Length: 638
Image (cartoon, rainbow, N blue to C red; front, side):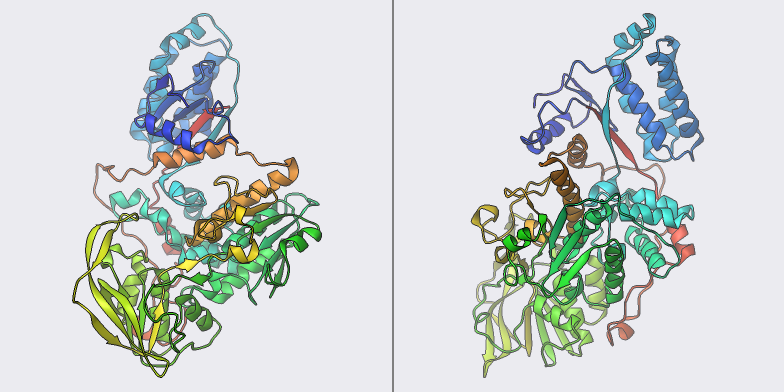
């Protein structure tokens, strides 16, 4: 893609480079004709009428204004009236000055970003095309109306893999419209009770409120709505949008599969999920302890799915009990693969493959615990790892009665990928953290774990992950005696058990799909979640299932998949970043974040009761009032 002939965007070159990398053969490079949004204006196509584009932009701005700021509520309507006069051939030269004054006033006085970000693109296009605007006014030319695609984003929306309209549902909580808030959540998140408890909260890291005082408790507010629905306080329905004839098979009842089936069912497609386990949820159910995610939450969300007509067949291992060919022969015209990453990575440690008793992986340990069993006996337990699975293992071990629970991590706490809240609560529960330590050998007596030999580490230069690489300290070997060892250093995909064909799998045994459409080279097969990306976040898996459902529908209706212009615009918005960590506010922090209360450590370690509580309605209302409504608009001519 060539550079635009009009470019007032601060990071215009970076957007062009991103467009080049995002646009594939499925989207013509000529499809991106312009961009107009919070950062300015970019125009590639000289046939675009800037007068019409400004009119379309202001009309969209007015429709997105919440109306709570008088200058924005009245000013955007006035702007549209002035522009309607201009495009209708009845404009006056004074209108241009009026537009400039209005947008400057709205940006200076607006509370939310719809109003605050309006001045730069409007002033830029007026300055760049002043002669064109004057020519339209003087000749009283009526402007031909064009077509435009747009996306509405925000720093929090952009950070969320599913691009959930976070300000939208928070605003409705504040206004007491809980059912409307839940409708907004379910539009992009089919498991709000789960996400409202265990999401890693990338949205909160990008919350602009955090630059002022503290981020909004976005996850807790989502859980508030989910619990209201689960307890019958609010009722929301997602009726199918028509009835389709084509059947779709979904492999795996984990988050990605549940999400894909949910959104396909809402589109009216008959769906069947084939699940190898005896129950739904995948790693959400068998890898996340019930003190974080109670089983009745997943049961409720699956019940919502089944009410939409989705059938789940448990105990069916695709690749063993039934093949992909047999699924196709039963009339399923498309298949979504969402089998996750249920196997464990190797430590490359001497003795880990010896089959010693009381040496078991983190995935197996948590899975057995979720089924009500104690996987191993003893008093002293060691877990190796620094992610959320490792945190779940050590905290579960305390609840199972292990008295001395230790966690080994080869870097420092600053490099640990686990949720800081999980680290903090693990420390409160008496878990011993050993940083800059790496295992080198499993020690055993009578084929049973007796200890682990370790090396001290120090941090060297950054590796590919951006974290400083741990380097062994020569002569620093030492031994930790223990009864149980649990490695929790990563997970491995098993797509090769479902799809053994080499042409659709990577060397890492992940499924190869288009990054936008989620379609594989075998056109009827789609995939998403951990089996495509490797182990990632739960919200990322839900997003993949949701997006794949849209393109599966497109494939079934049109015979192929093609990204829409809005997909490209959204990718460009994401590349731009939206969130500016260097942004400063003219006033200091004035509010405190509402945090859910938690059980005291001495109480919670005695069982698997849920640790975190739900916000009360009054506290949810107070917290939602802290949202700054940081919406941004980005538009392109079609």
